[in-house]
Image 1 (cartoon, rainbow, N blue to C red):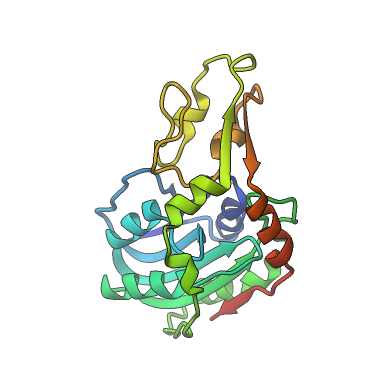
Image 2 (cartoon, rainbow, N blue to C red):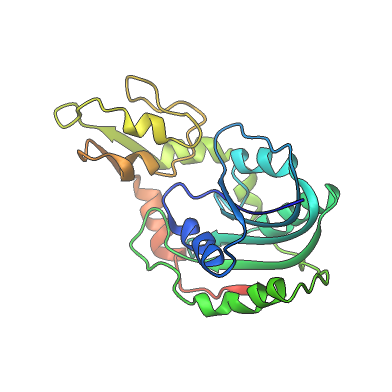
Length: 238
């Protein structure tokens, strides 16, 4: 069976975590999760990394996780500094049902998509997990129970659409369609309108070479981030 680094990282913050693992574990296959992806292979060891959205697992990631099968897994979830919710525990439960033993995990605060807080840089905190893999120590761990704000369950997709507006500047647009081609959930139309499945990850804004796309917060999201975006700790389980 294979060893794999599988990650979802629309704007690159979570990819940096996966890249660090790859730098230290060079014999792992690297796979980025894309829209509607299902995995058919079985994995001896899987290192899964993805960001938390609205305190939960993005739908595109949840679908991919449900198709994964194998023996051992490490799970890394990233969040922007508000709340990590129950994403790590939920992912662990799904993988456990699919035959995996969870041997490592991390909750990592990194840059929030809608703010200028810094990227994660304390990579040395991942070294105990990496050393465990290098030494072929496959002892199972238990992910502790986690809390999730009950309000996060209420209309998450609608809240995202109301909170963040994606703006298309026709004068700047060269119709290269890079934004459409790079959307991880195929949510942009050829008229540069966001469909209902848009997760407001802002990858389209980031990849546009002509700055033809931008975004705008509503006043409530600005206030929410100001009140709750803080320096929290990262947690590591091994």
